[in-house]
Amino acid sequence: LRVNGFVVETKALAFPTVLPQKSAEVDGASILQALAHHNIQQLISDGDSEIHLDFSASILGATLGATSERVEVASDQITLSTQGKKKSKLPYPKHLILCQNNDKGRLVKAEPDSMSLTANGFTISLVDGSFIYQSVTDSTKPIVSSLQPNLFRAGTDNDGVKQLGDQFFDKSKPLGLWLTLGLDCTTLEDLDVTLSSKKINFSGDAMDFPSFVTKARIFGHPGRRKYEGITLAEKLEDSSTSSVKLGKWEQQVTMVGNGSVYVEITLDLEESLRDLPRVGLQFTSPCMGKACFFLRMD
Image (cartoon, rainbow, N blue to C red; front, side, top):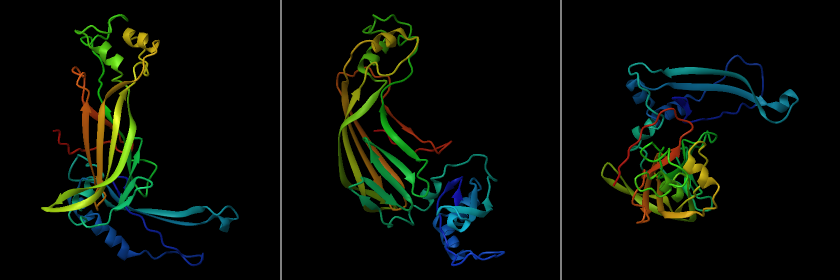
């Protein structure tokens, strides 16, 4: 079952023997159950999603005198819905939002050793102070990964892009200071990860769900990134500047029963960092052309 190109559920049936046959039976009950679970009827009514059922038949390669890998011999696709009523295409996680209340009691599996949470076909794994959020059935393309602090932006003439290489500390042109602090290249170090829990409200009901809390220090690395043609940056590359402590990072990642993920970030920056070009977050989402976000900034 695919929603907007993403696999949301799969099921395999084994045939006892390989015989010439014109048709094969499909487990209709499991298909109907999957359609109900993912609120497919609601998505079809909304008319803003592409929904398909993909079928394929495969046999073991050994049957063909090859290896034991499976070889696909037939396939077909049934279209349940295309974008019709609306021009905008909402992102794939919409079906998670629709079934949130129905799935509030589903089990979330916490694995402290591998630092991962799994529920409803989705998993989130802690990696280098950040996390990777992906579908269990398609682990090749994470939905979200590499969440990091972002304290930098592209420089302008007013920031000092055209300054000479000896004007690092011109207060009227802050680009030199930003570069010497390494704001353009930050890392999370001295990690401490603990298993915890958090109460999440569903229609007035507060429930405890497992979460991971990551604490780390934020460091800037001056001169690590190259900017050809920017005199300040080119001169900084030739100097042996050490890493700069910028502050502290605390991240709590909580997964609920339907596979949705709640992320809370606290940035505690050094008091000396008075003039910052940006205080924000950045992440990678390689499998989405579009995405929607529900953010609250305190």
